[in-house]
Length: 68
Image 1 (cartoon, helix red, strand yellow):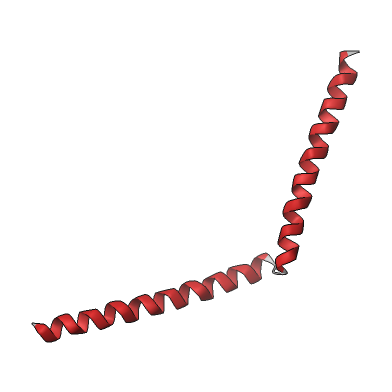
Image 2 (cartoon, rainbow, N blue to C red):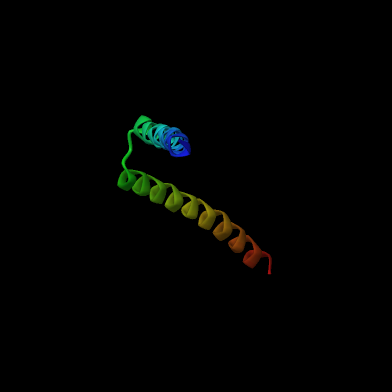
C-alpha cells in the first residue's frame, strides 16, 4: 500500500504547484499588461533613462571643454 501514499504525496505536490502557478498568473493579470505591452513600456523607460544620461554627460563634457 505504499503506492497509495506516493500518489497522495504526488497529488499534494502537484496541487501546490498549480496554486503557485495560479498566483503568478493572477499577479500578471493584475498589472493588466501583456508580455508585449510590458516589453514596450520597459523599452520606453530605458530610452528615457538613456536620454537623461546623455544630457547629463553631454552637459558635463561641454563644461570641461570650455575650461580647457
